[in-house]
Structure formats: structure tokens, C-alpha cells
Amino acid sequence: MNYKKLAATVIITSIIGLNFMPAACFAKTTQKVNKDKQNKKTKVIKSQVTEYRFDYINTDWWKRFDDEYLNNYIIKAVENNHDLKIATLRVEQYRQMEKMQLANELPSVGVGFSPTGMKLPGVTNTSGMWAFPITVSYEPDIFLKNRDKTRSAKKDWEKAKIEERASYITIASAVGATYYNIIKADKLIELQKDIIQSRKEIYELMSERNKVGLTSTADVVRANKAYVAATADLNDLEKSRDTLLNNLAVLIGESPANANKLKRKAYEDSYLVKIPDSIPSEIIDQRPDYLAAEIMVEKAGIDTRAAKKEFLPRINLIGLMAFGSSALNTAFNWSNVFGLLAASAMLDLFTGGRKVANLKLKKNQYEQILHDYYNTNLKAIQEVNDSLVSLKQDDKKYKTNLNVYKLEQIDFDYSTIKYEDGLISYLDLLQRKENLLSLNKLVVSDKIDCNIDYIGLYKATAARI
Image (cartoon, rainbow, N blue to C red):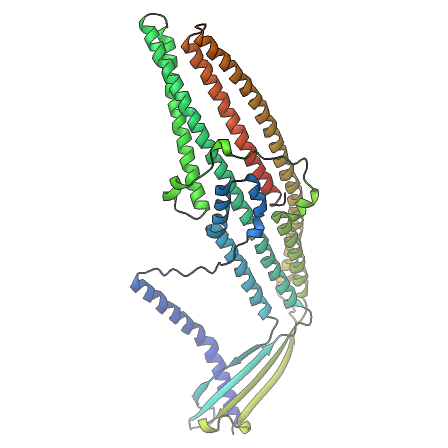
């Protein structure tokens, strides 16, 4: 057998494989795209997300509110929220990227088939050959360069998992805060309607008194302005509630068209949270942003080490074996085998300063990431402290306004008795009733704000309280 012919066949086969295989792939993709355009239909691929991370959101914590509606919305958000599905798919994306990098540590094996016709130099006739090449290439990772790159890719995967947990906590917190803001809006709208009714009666009474000269026209105009302003405030409250309902619907993966069907507890049945005295400092170490920053420091260190190893030589092993014959029925005879084994060690002598610049770049990035890690730690402590302070201060504010409201209620009860005894006018009673309603609005806002602050503390502590 002419091994020169076989060697040439194998080389030609390799060239054909390198040059034309990408073109074939591109043509196939183009054909699919054109077919999709002709059909003009969008195919929906079934979601790969089947696992729900309820452990991320600490479902037992949400049961403290003793609200079945809220618990159901949290569950629906975990199961249906599209941002959470994207976060989970992103974790899988980085896992596959880590596997792709791991493949660089393993040998690469290829097989081929190439019927070839050729004419060699110095020969007048043309001959054909059936070739079945098998190629093996491998870069022994003596200096662990590829291993470091795989470790770096794995850190990206670990960070994606931490960011997934952060997304779950963020969405759960948004559901809880939105839900309680809706409850607050419901009660404020109810109270605002009472205020409107009271101001309407005041305006009508002043108008009647103005007709008999007991009230000035200016007082009537002011009463009318107050009545109109109260109506405008009601419109703003209803607009805010509609927006909150739409937001809650999207958070739980439902259409905003069904927003008005979302159920919730009445304000009077809502739970008032219990404030923790302090937060353990160990909780900071469990925050997703802190853990992600820590992983990025580790990754930056690995990338810097990998940049240093780029100055070391590259070692490659190449193996080639081919069955070849001019007759197909004798192609797989061992006598027709062509084999090649080669090794190489290559060291770059001059790269224009690229490797030096890359190493300095990685060191610079490491310093930036390290400072970001320190800054993240400080901000994490600040956020937890701010959340706890806000909760405590709002609780004090709620209790203070609640006491003022109770005193105003007592005063209003006395005023009612005075009105029944004929000591004060109905107009005076209506004005004091409006003061009572306005104080009640403050109490409602303060109580719900405490619950929302508690949810903010839940988020700040990464669902660990």
C-alpha cells in the first residue's frame, strides 16, 4: 500500500472537515430559520423549570402572619413568577458553561470517512482511496492551567445559584409588601369615603346657613374646596390600589386582567408583627450579596493565577490512525493502517506584551473585587441595622398615634353626648368626626408600615430571622 497516498488522503480529509463543516452547520440553521419564516408560527417550548426552591424563602416565617391568602400568593409566586424561572434557568446555563470548560481538560477524539480521488506530483495517473481517519488530541494539564479555568467557571455557577436564592427572597418580599399595601389602600379608601361624606354634609350645612346669613361665602367656598380635595384624594388612593393589584398579579404569574379578583384579609384582621430585640451578626454571613462577593474574590484569585500560568509552555499530544485502501472491502485490514503519534511543547517568545498586560489586568480586577467585597460587607451591616431601626421607630410612631386616636375617640364620644344635649351644633360634631377619621388614617398607615418594615427586615437578613 502507498502510505504517501494514505497520508495525503488523511490530510485532505482534515482540511475538508475544518473548512466545510461550519458552512454545512450554517446552511442547516439558515434552512430552519427560513422554514420558520414561511410557517409564520412561534413554537412555545415547554419550560425546563420543574423544581421550586421553597427552602430559599423560609415558608415557616411567612406563617407568622397567620394569613392564608398571603401564604397562597407566596406559593404561587414561587411556582409561577417568570423572573424566578429565568434565575433558575441561568443557574443551569452556568452549569453547562462549567461543563464546557471541563471538556478542555479531557482528550478530544474524532472519526471520519472520506472517499478521495487524487493525483500526486510526478505521477500521470489519478487514483482513488477510501479513508477512515481517527484522530486524538490532548493537552496534558501539567501546570493545571485548564483546571484553574474550570474552577473559575465553577465559581460563576456557584454565584448564579446564590443569585437565584436572592431572586426568590426579593420576589417573596415584593409579594408580601405589595399585599399589605393593598390592605392599607382598602382601609384608607374606606376611611376616605367617610371623610368625603362628612365634608359633603359640612358643605351642605354651610350652604344652608349662608342663605340665612349665618355663614360667610368665603367659609362656604373653603368647605367646597375641602370636599373637592377629598374626592381627588380618593381617586389617587383608588389609582394606587389598582396599580398595586396589577403588580401583585404579575408577581404571582397571573394576568393583570384578573387583578380585581385577588382576595385579601380585612385591615382589622391583619396581624401586627413582633419586633426582635436584636439581630445576630452571623446573619450577615448568610446574605446572598455577601456570599456572592466572597465567591467573586475567590474567582478573581483563580483568574490571576491562571494569567500567570499563561507564561508557561503549552504541551500537546496528537494521535492519528487511519484505515485506508483503494478498495472498500480491504479498507479495514490491519495491513492498511496508517498511524502517527506526535508531541509538542510550545513557548511564546514574543506576544507584544499581551500576556503581561493580561496579568496586570487580572491583578487590577482582583483589587477592585476585593474592595467591593469589603464594601458589600459594610453595606450589609448597614441595611440590617437600618431595617431594624426603621421597624422600631415605626412601631413607636404607631403606638403614639394609636394613643392619640384613642384619646380623640373619647373626646368625640363626649362631643356626641354634648350634641345630643344640644350644647354643640351638628356642624361642630362633623368637624370633630373628620379629625377622628384623619387620625384613624394615620394609625392604619403606621400599623401596615410596621408589617412592611418587618418584611424589609426579612429581606435584609436573607430570610434568616
